[in-house]
Length: 319
Image 1 (tube, rainbow, N blue to C red):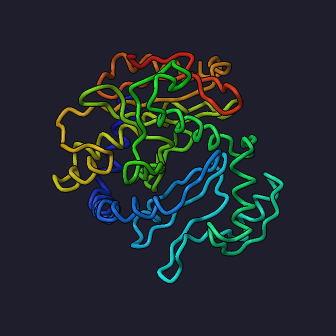
Image 2: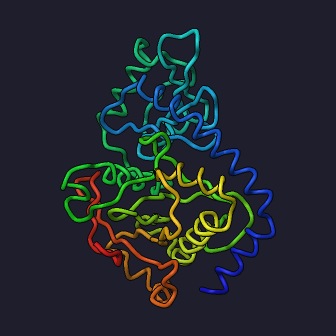
């Protein structure tokens, strides 16, 4: 594990001026745009199984756009125009093709007024009322269900089996995948922008941060713990070995009001409970977390309940 950490930190150090300048600019634009993002998010409402997400590029725009997802798949884009009284649902040719392929929904590509057009009404009726089926990239669907539980403020969070966890969001309530300057797909380290499935605050008081890698049933488990660990090491470096202004922006983006000198970061792999045995290839890495207390590696085993709820079956995190 120490060799992995050395390699990640060497790459980050050698390229630090490049990525620190870029990411500082990203954070500054998003933070300055937060009020605008929140205001525009309040302009449209969705029920049922539709969700609004953002990526860094959308959040940095002066007129932000939102990805409208169904089962984790992008079904359309919500945009705003000064000369329009209501938001506009945009369906690109690719989204129209994928909606038809995966969900048997044949609305053609185009731009539709969100509240007043018949097409947008048809869109809402189709996607709000029907639970999303598994598709090619089922991690996205499970990610949606896990985020839904994290947002749940009641004791029924994760069917009552897991608590004290909140997702890191843009403008307080818009989920996104955290962009970082390291890619670690399959545990292979490279200097290329990557994404963490979910970054979450965990615990009470001065909370810890979790870099969560989600794995679906039957997915690729080899290298999963290493991938989560690489992302956690990257986050730790960004929080601890950068300039004061950078740190302040990063803490703000992650929902903290203050900068902490001892923020704890954990690597977490979320795996289906019935596939836990598939994770045995990573057992040595999990055992190593007992020694590497600085950035420990944990697991969460989950189960899909009622075709949309996530129940946590077990975890190595302190609860």
